[in-house]
Length: 532
Image (cartoon, rainbow, N blue to C red; front, side, top):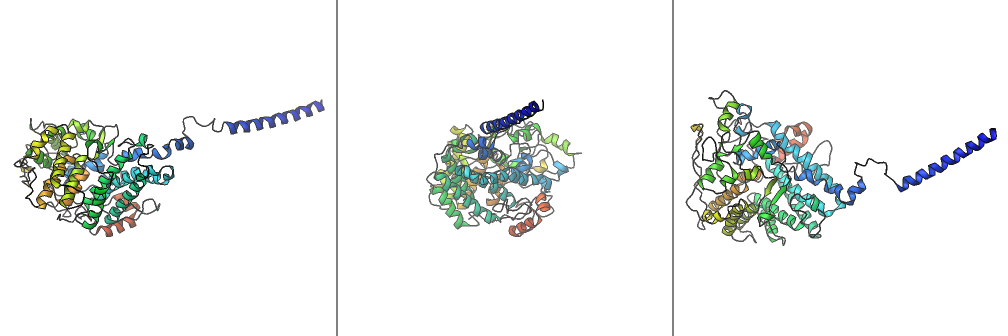
């Protein structure tokens, strides 16, 4: 019996050993078979470049945020200050961004979105660039597109030093940031030129379907935009970069099919803000110009007002809570019937960040400044108008509009409160005049570019600050406490409260680089107050 037990014990040990060897062998052969089938492994991500490509979607969707919180990112600042839109409601009893009583908690969102959703993902792409140089190149172009907008709001930004410290971040001056923008575009274009016909980016590309030739066109066009932006503060650098863009063999955006439009297949954020919340309406400045010019794009931009049936009506910016109203909702009830944004825009699922029309107007100004390769200013100007008309399906009306040398912006009439009425601030016409001064020609170019870029308020505000055109109506009520001049209008937004609390040393360095107090009246580096 003892012998049998001993034999059985030896048998069990042998079987356990064999089972162990077999299990180890199976584990090698079927490594990962017991992993969660719903989880994607790193190897799978690497195989189709998902490991790097998946980081692009949040970048595309947050440069211009695909969310109703776009109201804080841009709608309650640049869209107002650029003369496109304005709220019918005097938020916070009239103490708000619209009246220059700047709301720090609103403006904080601009910074948070740019860094948490855009820059963080772009940093991850940079860290993974060994998987694809071309993907990295595209990320650099997107980085410039996203962050020049942030710099054009605040001035100095955290850019070249982003991610180098977990406790504090050093700001670049705006001049330093712009120089790095140009350097990043150089690097991106040098990389893309080495594999211009690559096709691996297709399923991650929400703009050009993976076509690197079109990305090169956008990079050239973006370089031209930034070169024009600094033309008054650093004309030599502007000319160098502008002519580099104009001379690149891949060319610029020329047709509407090449415009930089993010195809997110999501609800346009302005639809919620405009029509569900009733928090934004046409700005009186845009009404003055488009109605004065009998612009056929107008019904595509806005719907008729219910306050003035048969008319498209805008609201003056900076309305306070007026004394004849008990509260802001009562005032909103009278102004909510002004013109809402048109279906062509709010029912679209795409975000427009650069159009062919804008690029033709950039070329018109480049020609006006005598830059090599820019062509003829008049031809570029008229082509810009034509491209915008075609974009909205009214191309046949462009020739008559272009030749109109009599129509001018109209005086503004507020049908609810005539104390808000104001006369047009300019008599600029549409038709090109070769005998006009460069300043008069520039006003025409910027005015028509401004109309064509709607609803992209960030560029509208930047171009207004850079040139003083178009001539926008000042706010009705300026509650800035003297920090912002009513006629000069707001120049920037202050650094955000989250940076003051988490990066105080960085902010203090940024203020030194800003060259003025941290308020809405301090001009940015490229905002010189002069044109030619």
